[in-house]
Image (tube, rainbow, N blue to C red; front, top):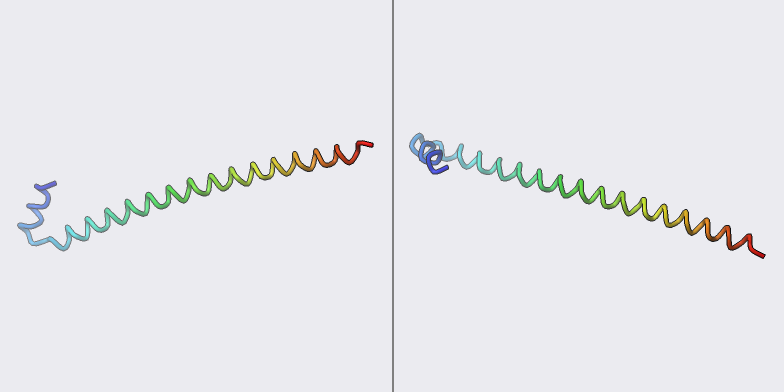
Length: 69
């Protein structure tokens, strides 16, 4: 990495190096954010599925309880 910095500094392309580093950092941050968003979406979907299963069981129990004399 230091060799790359030396080459850029000798040629006077420090602005390009800074832009490259910024773009790399921004892309990495975006990748992490999308990964976390995907995980959060999956957890929310699991939660909704469990809630649906709970409601089905509760309705079934309520029907059974209302049928009993």
